[in-house]
Image (cartoon, rainbow, N blue to C red; front, side, top):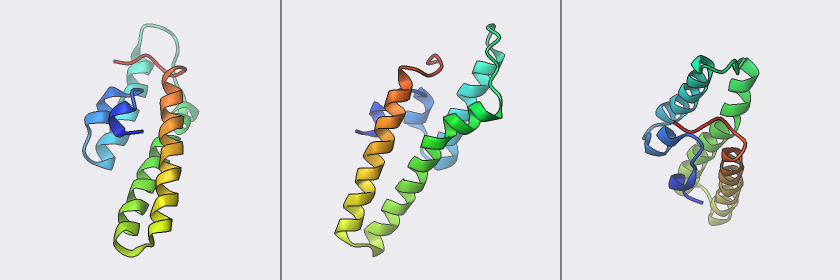
Length: 100
């Protein structure tokens, strides 16, 4: 799975830095807060929405470090975990907030 195939938050796909990517997720939650429907997220919504993205960013950092200092097997295992997180994010698309 690639970054381009993570459709839940479209701005996430074009963001360059971890801060921009997490900001895109937070923005979508704020948009949900101000939508005309009374579906106001609370802190738990932010926690739940950010969890897989934070995990993804940490894995990307670990993979980058492992590429310099780790073993091939460690990199393979981290990429496997990344694939699982990407699948989790993609699965959220069908049950998450509307795309903007």
